[in-house]
Amino acid sequence: MRVWQPGGHLMRERGARVEDWSWRQTRRRLGTLVRLTRPYRTRTLLSVVSLLLATATALAPPFLSKYAVDDGIRQHDLAKLWWIVGAFVVAGFLNWGMSYAQTYLTGWVGERLLADLRNRLFDHLQRLSLGFFERNRAGVIISRLTNDVEAIDQLVTDGVTSLVQNTLTLVGTAILLFVLDWRLALATLLVIPFMSVATIIFRTRSARAYSAVRERLGLVTATLAEDIAGMRIVQAFTRERTNMRNFREVSERYRDSNMETVVLNGLYFPFVDLLSSVALAVDAVRLHALRAELLRPRAAALAALRHLPLGDGGARQDRGRPRPGARSRRQAGGKGASAGRRTRPLRRRPLWLRRGARSAAWARSRRASRNHRRARRPYGCGQVDDRQAARALLRPARGPDHDRRT
Image (cartoon, rainbow, N blue to C red; front, side, top):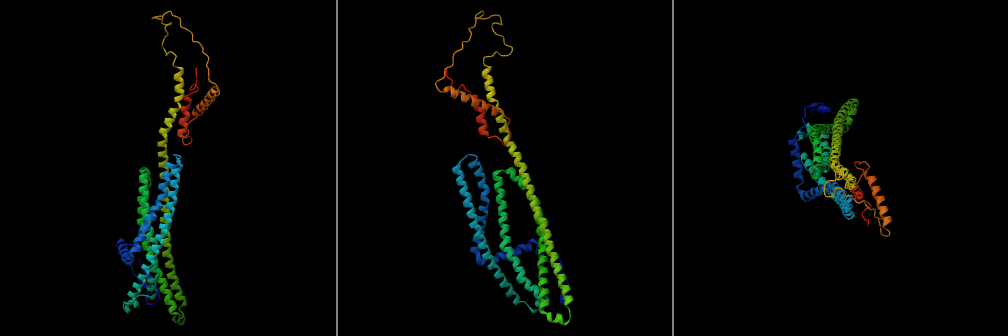
């Protein structure tokens, strides 16, 4: 990257290379920040612990929702459902408390770390030679102590915290998905390779773009400081238009650097949202297929149960009928010991019911016929409760003869 430094004897292009985007330089600078936290080890450790607890409590609601649906709502267990609702409330309060502790401790450590860094930078500036201040502009040096330190503040208080928390959330969510259903987990994690490639490309280019932004912001500050400090000379030699043209050029280059970061953010984050939508669509398709696999055997079982009352009634009616192709003894010519013997006709015996049983038997017969008509309706996926349908299908098998007394 080539940096412009207009103004005075430095009004020429300087071949400055910014290598802050490399992994090696990033590890070295993070190591320096870690060494600066040594005087505050206790609070740093507490902030890390509170961050872990806040992430764990944030992952609790999806896990509790599974038990609320499976063990509470489906089983109609109100006591267990109340316990799960209480766990929801406790997890919410714990997440609030841990998030507050993590934010406070991280801010406390970060502000003291940055104050120490500013003091060390100012002490280092006082030990430099005069040639350094002749070769570098005062505005650039001021920008190093203000804007660059502010960027480090955002990295310490927001960047590192978000990176660790989002990484832990991703790992914890993946573990929960594999525990609940490994097939849905695999379908969800199909987008991870594409997201990883996009993140690597975004990190490389955004690091270069943000480095250019910091460099050109320093040039804007330096140009403004020099023009204000030398305003008497500028007006004496009537250089207002020249300095205005130089400042406009520096400001436009700073704007172009910011627009490059805007374009990168506009490409990366919508692409991540697109991958999230694709993962959600894959989960929906997989969940629909899994639900169909689960409901198919249950539908077949209910279809088989639907024919039980009809088959049982047919078996009762066919119990005394001759089989197809069979001949009676009279048709066979009267062979056997009972040949020529006349069969006795069946006598009709009156049916006696005890008092009050007539209306009960009539009500049971009506209820059985109504359940039979319900059972003959077509089975619809997701419209019938399995237990109620099975109970309704099995009731007609008892019939009105259950309490009949002869």
